[in-house]
Amino acid sequence: MRIGELAQRAGTSTRTLRYYEEHGLVRSQRAANGYRAFDEAELRVVREIRELLAIGFDLEDIRPFVACLRAGHDSGGVCPDSVAVLRRKLAEVDAYLDRLGAVREQLHGQLTQAIARREKACPRRSKPPTGS
Amino acid sequence: MRIGELAQRAGTSTRTLRYYEEHGLVRSQRAANGYRAFDEAELRVVREIRELLAIGFDLEDIRPFVACLRAGHDSGGVCPDSVAVLRRKLAEVDAYLDRLGAVREQLHGQLTQAIARREKACPRRSKPPTGS
DNA sequence: TCTTGCCCTGACACCGGCGGCAATGTTTAG
DNA sequence: CTAAACATTGCCGCCGGTGTCAGGGCAAGA
Image 1: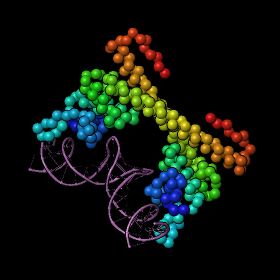
Image 2 (image 1 turned 90 degrees about the horizontal axis):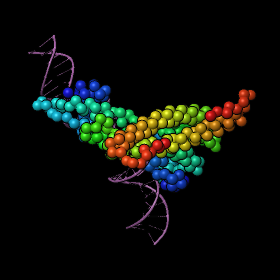
Image 3 (image 1 turned 60 degrees about the vertical axis):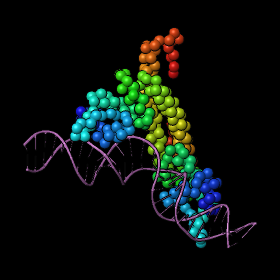
Image 4 (image 1 turned 45 degrees about the horizontal axis):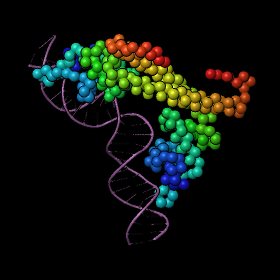
């Protein structure tokens, strides 16, 4: 399979595939003319990469998952290194959720306060909304 | 007040202050020698900028807040434009919280699945942990 | 006067995952 | 034979807030 076909089948660009290869995530043989020849299995690899990227992983984090696939597992997430990354990412996400929740509270508080002041400045007859 | 003092009092760098000025968020007079002379009120402005940046605003979003302070309000968030930004940001944060929650679920699912497979592959005598 | 410490402008570097272009070679269908 | 469609490498651009350096000027104490 050549790069164009792989790109199309994986739903990405040739540029992207070369980038992955350059960073050691995707592998290829070279034909006599210098064209890359991708093994069928690389399609699975590329799809794994794309899925994890979409979730918010960076390429470094994805390495173990690719290695896991290459080791013959049908899921990239079952190997110890992958599990470690999953744990770490989960922790990161949880931490970020906390921070973002706090930010949400701040924003909400600011808004409530600003609106309250506006109400005080030029009062309407409607009851002050007691939103979420 | 010169730039070094303002930087120190605001807890940031001179580089940063020049950047804010370059982008019209902070103002200064110039002394005869070319040195920037900052009004005392700019300290409040810089602090507002820093707080909002820390929350995740970008400089564009912060503009109305600075304008609001300059208009004499004691809070940057009470003016209509600021309120609009607050609303938008709140919506963005909410959307992001949703996405991040979904990501969390995915990660959690992957982890659970991976651990389950490991249990099946080399079972321990301990009961399978029924975590959060 | 010399040194030290502040200030000035301008400009490159960074991070990460690509997009996109240039300049060139290869294959294939008409 | 030719044109189109594919492939190659290499390099610049982007985003945004800042660090950091270069190469100067200005102020004030010993």
